[in-house]
Image 1 (tube, one colour):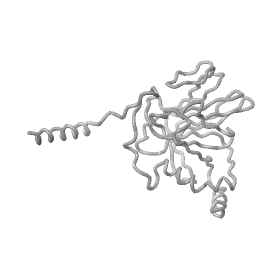
Image 2 (cartoon, rainbow, N blue to C red):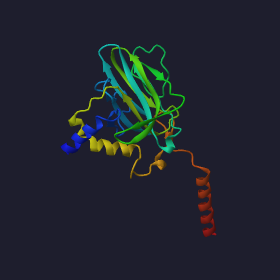
Image 3 (cartoon, rainbow, N blue to C red):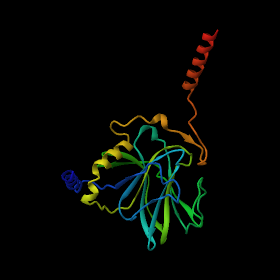
Length: 237
């Protein structure tokens, strides 16, 4: 395993830039439960599946002085997510006119919404051999102290997204001992390889987190229901 990790480090040194990956398992849904960014300058990414139970992804950062943070919001390149349109907000105590949100924001803070690009850019991650659409990519100014980065879909739709921060690569040999699990988890998230079909799991929720409903059934589904009902009536007669 150490040999494999060493080889990966050597090969990766000659490839394009990449984020150190982390994975959400449905947590990090509130500011109190936010995922902690150890260093906002280090290039890291958090992958998250948006569900009706966890419609918002929260990340927490802390800086000692006013700083500039590089942020990205991406969506896996999956056909059913072609129109999935989540947004990204930076939350801190110097937002003079924050936007209203369908979720609770820490007292004394506001949300600075960062507009999505008009046309999605494609992003290829060389290590995992996966592709995503980039919806937000920019450097933002934040005041000293603690703050948050939040990602959510304004329409209340479920889907998948990832949030990345930082531009400085900081991979060690010990980090790369996790490379096999990183590779498998990232490709599973992007539905590359032999992962299960999940299209039927996608839902449309109310924007209010306490309410959730499945997508409206298609015409074909209603016709199938009516056909089964008619068949049962014939059998009864």
